[in-house]
Amino acid sequence: MKRIPIIAANWKMQLTEAESKHLATFLKENYQPSADLEVLLFPSFLHIASVRDIIAGSGIYLGGQNLSFAEKGAYTGEVAAFQLADIGCTHVLVGHSERRHYFHEDYETVNQKVKAAISSHLKVVLCIGESADERKAGVTEMVIVDQLESAFSGIDHDKLASMVIAYEPIWAIGTGKPPKPEDAAHVHQIVRKTIRRLYAPEIADNIRILYGGSIDAKNIKAFMAQEEVDGVLVGGASLDAKKFLQCLKNWKD
Ligand code: PGA
Image (tube, rainbow, N blue to C red; front, side):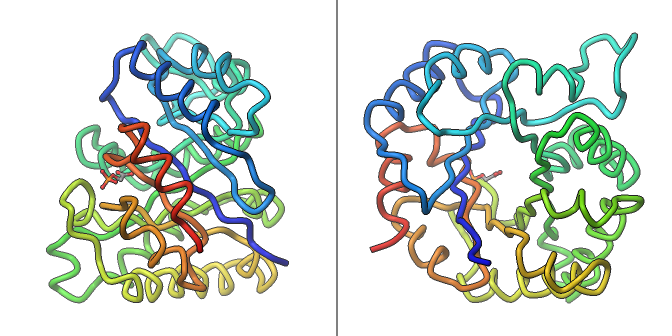
């Protein structure tokens, strides 16, 4: 089966509502949807409804940047999976390195969030990646395998198939210093090999593995050209409407 590539925009905590609406409007007006690419936006929770209304009918998908581990209830300040689904999200980011670092999300929390998302039929974009020190110490493979095994704990075959993995080496996020595309692709192979071992060859062959970290309109094509890279998660370069549109246009010849 051919894996349809994904280009996803992670707007993090960067934009006002007016800026989010401007970006969404610009994309809706200038991006021609195509069957060979999925485009996915992760706005702030606060702007999801406005962005949803703007991109309605455009074929662009919408996701939350985070969710609560809990299903529902007295959890002041949290946002539950069912609320994301209810407001029109199809996807949710889980385990972004900024959440693991600043909000101390450990392996167990990430696993709980994966389960919470799946129970509301959200497609999880699971972020994994090693730190600079881990890379230097030569333990990248061990870290990646640990992150996958813990996140997947208790997840059935049929549920895993709907997930997307985003490999985001922490040292490449927001630094302007991505790895060589072939080095990223090598880690993607490790991810696929691990999924093959834990689940089944057809699940591993079909699951989409994105690369994220300092992707821009200039380097996107080299990453997307790698057989193992099924798309990208773009942070900084997704905040500028023209630059992100360039990414959507430049990813292939
Ligand atoms: P970046 O962020 O493109 O700004 O490096 C990527 C991410 O954190 O998802």
